[in-house]
Image (cartoon, rainbow, N blue to C red; front, side):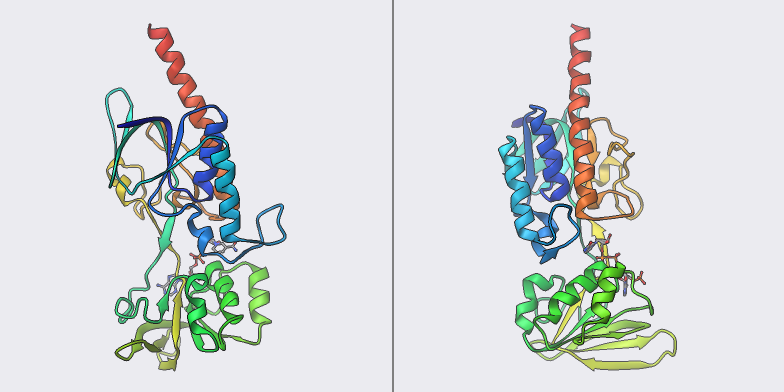
Length: 314
Ligand code: NAP
């Protein structure tokens, strides 16, 4: 059983910042992740809204954050968290697929995962023309026609990325107005390789034995059905929180987002949450980093209080 002052679950920007702040306060900190550090930054090409950089590649920013955290003394540990429990002494127990840990503070930074569209053919052609990551899979569609589903920041920024590689990008959106930031919208509308299909709900992703060949959609205003030919479908219809393993703690809302106060504290003393997994409005690297700083500092103050109370009792 390995014991720490603080265990951060998830090594995205929020988690790495929280871990770095706690380690700089001279606490013994582990950062657990079930994969490589960096989180969703690893799937992002150019980041243009992180202060200090005109533009930086997602994996590079992840690398720099990791170096800052580990240089401060954070230990990176592989582990897929299965459950967190709390004993009578308020010690937190973390069970992963490989090891068990105890800690005074848990900071949850597990982020979110792409939401599935839930239509016919999505499961069948996943990895055979359907993707949720343009940076990972865009190169397979060089000079081909692709379809992007969604109208948010992800759909438009990834659509712009795909426009550099593919022949044409058709953005299929259920309304006639994009949700994405204006700066991305302007860039997309000005791009000759990008087209838009409005008021369209995808009902089926079609294909042959091997690969995606088309998308069936319904115009939600006229009721008209149409099929377009496409070689690839990139789905960006929002995210779902990675919080299933914390369900028993009763700290999530109905949709699974973790509820915190402005200090990143959940309703359980010593358990904090930061970044995209948190119930909040603006999910960005900058806001995750802000959450992380607050939680890391509060972890330190919480442990100080525990130590003080222990001294009084003696
Ligand atoms: P999002 O903002 O939730 O947008 C999801 C999009 O998918 C919306 O346009 C939505 O349509 C559409 N949609 C949802 N369910 C659908 C369905 N069942 N069928 C068809 N369309 C559906 O998700 P996101 O774009 O992945 O972004 C997630 C978070 O990350 C956001 O906070 C975003 O700002 C942030 N992010 C930021 C950047 C950046 O700053 N560069 C880049 C990527 C992501 P409606 O508009 O009609 O609801």
